[in-house]
Length: 103
Image (cartoon, rainbow, N blue to C red; front, side, top):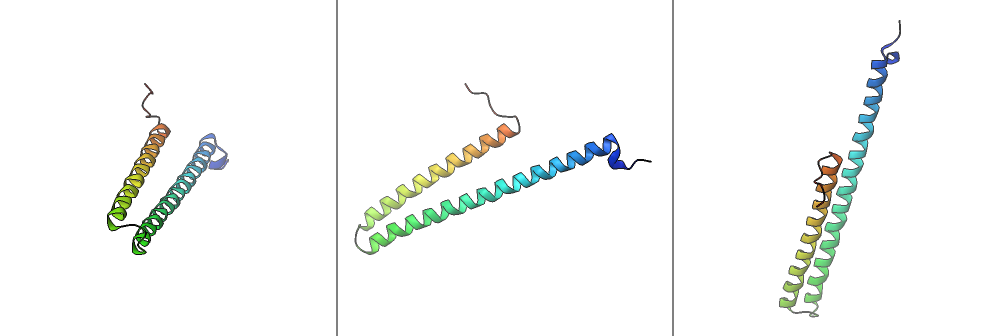
């Protein structure tokens, strides 16, 4: 008698399991990269924010200039985050075959 692995159904199941494991691994790697890029963007933001505050503390810029620069920094990072989120959304929709046709 042949083992279940030698039957056509067993081979298909084994291949499907391997493919599933590869996809899970790829998703974990993507998630890890996403976390790393988010962390680096956050730490970059924090460094820039601290630099602006330090310049104000040293008297290089006024409090009003500091607030204006911090507001601009927040707007820039918000725009970058929204762009990244939109790109991730579009990529995932494309992966699922649900991407909207280009006009």
